[in-house]
Length: 378
Image (cartoon, rainbow, N blue to C red; front, side, top):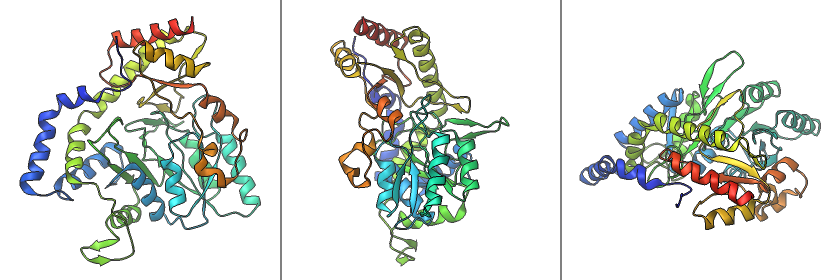
């Protein structure tokens, strides 16, 4: 048997007629930029996330970068995030002139460590630095521990921008049992609709969600060359618009997202059931504050590289998210971090292995993946 890491073909074949109708309508009307598909998707996605506003962008990276600009980040401002994320999180910070400050992750759930977060903030405040914001990353479809993050942010007069690029529809459950969706807790939330995401376009796309009208308005102008209306430029902006075809496709898929997320959860539960008694495998933990959507199902295992190669020989294709922490990447040598600075991130980076995960994954495929892992271990 061959088990792909992700199978986008199944989903798109089922939706092919609807998707092709979007393309045909765009060709017939020549409405490729803006228009009703963009505005209606923005309304529908804001409603899905439980926010007042959503603004479509050209990518998740655009969403992050434009949100930081709209929130007033200026050159020299410091922003805290984690070193175990895709580089887009930190690119957005550095590209607006911000300074990246890394904080290590929690051992149990791979998201921002709350105690280390506050310790880093206290240290920087003693040194009178320009610390402005926290950018927690909701990783693999699980939420960061947002309740204490928001309390710390308020205590130290910081704002929070959520990197929700892997958490479409994930739920945060507060201590008072209040439930909110990813992206709706901070000043703004940023999403990617890269094709492999839980909600994926047929190309690049992203969005910002927020209750802050000023943030939404400024992101709209920033994505469109700083225009308040055609040829009236309030400031220099970018070409970072969500195109009409991608918006139309996302509108189709959004109708199925909750169903797909539930199928991912069921697949994760099945993996848990079959893997829990294998001592060499550490299965992902779902914390009390999060109902995850399993964009990825990530185990931790020693001899990871050898296991991955053997699984591929057996027809099981896996991924690594992320094998080299950002503070050890050549791109960030200038920050001055070194090996050993973030031990939890570094240890996990050598052990993590993302198993096949997509809504259409079958029980037979899951069993084959687990049986193959057992064979590799033995």
